[in-house]
Amino acid sequence: MASRVHTLGVISDTHGLVRPEALAALAGVERIVHAGDIGAPAVLEALARVAPVTAVRGNNDRDAWAAGIPATEVVEVGGLSLYVLHDLHELDLDPRAAGFAAVIAGHSHQPRQEERDGVLFFNPGSAGPRRFRLPVSVGRLTIERGRVAGTLTTLEIPDPGARR
Image 1 (spheres, helix red, strand yellow):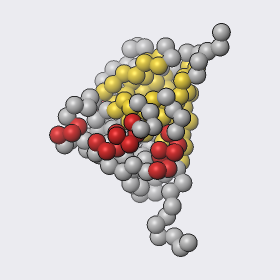
Image 2 (tube, one colour; image 1 turned 120 degrees about the horizontal axis):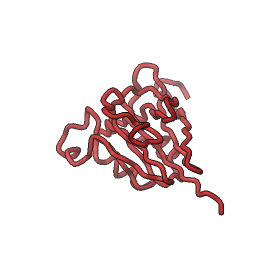
Image 3 (cartoon, helix red, strand yellow; image 1 turned 60 degrees about the vertical axis):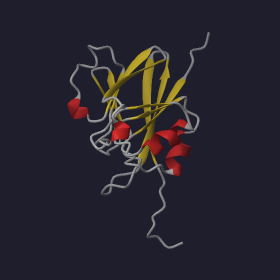
C-alpha cells in the first residue's frame, strides 16, 4: 500500500496583507499554517478559501479579533506532530523530547529551514509588506512515510516603482 503524501502551506507575518501571489503559491495544499502576525481576520478568511487554516497569534495580533487565537498550536498530520508558535525565541520546550517532527515559527521575516537534533525548524519568512531587503516568501511542508521536508518559495512581487 502506498503511503499518502500530505502537503501543508506555511505562511507568516502577513500583517494584514493578502497577496494574490501568496494565495497562488499555496494553492493545492490540504491545510495552511499561519505562524502569526496575521494582522486582520480578512487574512484568515482569504486563506480559508484555499484550504483549512491553523493559526497562532503573533506579537502584533493584539486587537479583539485575535483574542481567541492561541499563542501555540500542535498540528497532527501523517502520523507526525508539528509545533507552531510565532517567535522561536519563545520556544519553552525541547521539541525532540516532546516528540515533534518540526517547529514552525515566523517573526524574523527571514525564510529559513534547518534540521537540529532530528527536528526540522521551519520559518516561511514574511508574505506581508516587504521589510528591508528581505524576500517576500511562503513555504510548503511535505509529510510522507513519517518524514517531513520543507520547501521555501520566494514570491515574485512587482516593484511598484518599476516602469512598465
